[in-house]
Amino acid sequence: MVNPTDPNEVRLTGENSFIRLQESEDGPQLTRTSHWRVLWSPAGQGHVLFITSELTSDAVKIYADNIALARWLQEEIESMLFPEFADQSIPVISAIFERDGDGQNYWTETVDSAEESIELTWHDFAEPFVLRAE
Image (cartoon, rainbow, N blue to C red):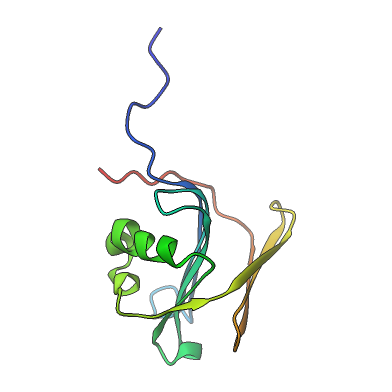
């Protein structure tokens, strides 16, 4: 029997959910988010939201409850996925993350900082997939 385990090093255990908004299928993205819920990483566990939107005047904003995790994600993963989110000169805004939903029909993440509150809601989910960085 073939060994079913993967001998590669685990770098992260968790979720990375996206929201991308555009007016038409081939139009420019008006909003792009990358939301992370990390259960384990070399930088610890926590939540991070990367966002750029017309609501942020097209600037990248980063919210996190673990700044070290935000910086680790920038260096290790966002630099490959979306380099605009990887700029470590962007300040990380301290935030509290809460979730609601059944995971089958909808999911809402609420991100609260001292000055802002953001709600992200997903429904009509796409199939989950594995990202391999080799």
